[in-house]
Length: 464
Image (tube, rainbow, N blue to C red):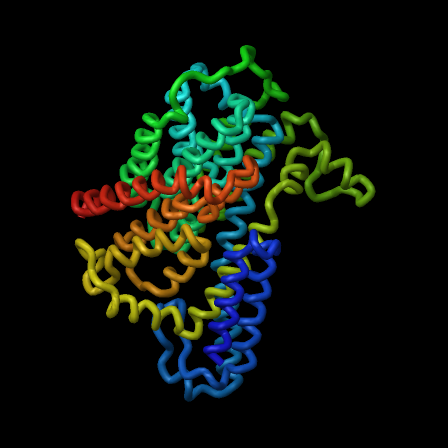
């Protein structure tokens, strides 16, 4: 039965990676894969020789001696445990997405365009790279990419020039998302899973991530595509709302407040995110002059409210397909973890993989394994890779392994345009060809990844 479950997972995973070829949204195979895996576990519960205790991160002793009812009860408890951990991530993401959409409702991101006051291509490249690096650390790399490419489309009229800038934005956004607990879904997973703390994540990864962004941007500055000046139209486009700047800084500040709230209260991050959402939503309702109750409204008025209430409008704009995809993939990985399959895979990796440089953890995983994880995230989705690593390794909070996984999974996806959410959305917005990116941008991303990895090893030696 274990072989059948693994086969279902592999087929589902393959369907996710071939999303653009088979024209089926990746949330569909993720949800189907999750449901079938758990259904097979339920049907074959008495045939499994072992069970993994996620709380103790160890195989359960004497599982085979338990009766059917005891095993069923254990399976239900395990399923509820994983659903709770997954829901923490999903609720957190829902809050962050809604805050970003509220900012966009007030045209807050148009304020960023005022920062660009030059026509030199190299200077504009650095402005966008630094903006992507900083912005992605606050509002996540996917949203930062959407915002900056939208601004880029208003500034750079020639598409052939614009896609070069878009390629470097992808690299910078993924690098920026790696050093922040709220900058990338995979880093958020490690943070919410109590594998990294905000302070140590920033201390270990800020400089490696900066090199991962800066070195490709520096090399690109000497390329012909970034020589000369742009033909930028004069005149500043006015924001649609007089509160655009206020809502931008309020929303960004509210998201940044979440790690601070967690540090002070030690509550799960989604609690702080809900508080931040409540504060931002309050000001949004006041600024929109909409007399509206969030809990009391009539069905016939719901459509009108969606247009007049910034909160309801923003909730209607968030990407629910992404939320459902994360639910499916994380719960599917949890199925493999519960059967001890990931635990066994981790032991195999430790024993069979050659060491490279300094080991991350005594008797643990080599640097080579984690770097392969980064390369792998360029080919297949980094979310299940990190989800699997959470189930495979039992290193304690803030072990250097988790910091290197956060860096590799976050930045390695830049090497292919389909390797990260930022790359996929840029591909859609600018119709960037896969092979054009492979020829022109991938080598820059690879250099950034290698330099950043080397910088991490240096930082690891310094911080110890």
